[in-house]
Length: 199
Image 1 (cartoon, helix red, strand yellow):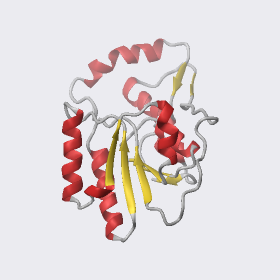
Image 2 (tube, helix red, strand yellow):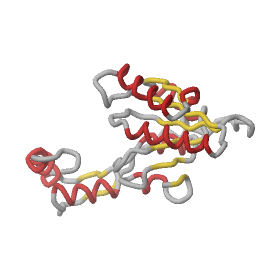
Image 3 (tube, one colour):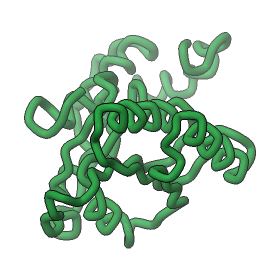
């Protein structure tokens, strides 16, 4: 109901039928199973959690960066909502106020407005208003071929998406040795745990 609004039961009907008719169901996280049970009805048949994989032969830690280099924050993925970018720009402003020399790279598609150009303009205006415009860089969409180099260029992944069922970007970042700062909601806490980042 929070995602769809009115008519969510009707919209869920086809998926509800599939979930209950299937011989076996794979959920991508415990959060996904809990949500399915809540909104589609608890399933009686067999099921299991099967987390999204990562190729650990490709996604490996990169070279250590110098201690005197600016601290680099990275936001990746497809951005369907502005708050994911807005919250990280605000965090960048707070870090700068505390004297931390840091930069922010935003990689991925920007989709919360009709055009990428409008989204970029909104980011630029916010960065100027927060006094961090020279420290924010929009990299645009990227392919899996360059994803590893993106993670290697950063010191930390910030994943602010609320109730993400199971973010692949978190698994990729951790496989590359990056800690993850995240919204402690959805399936992300299962993914990161207590040792690989902070919720």
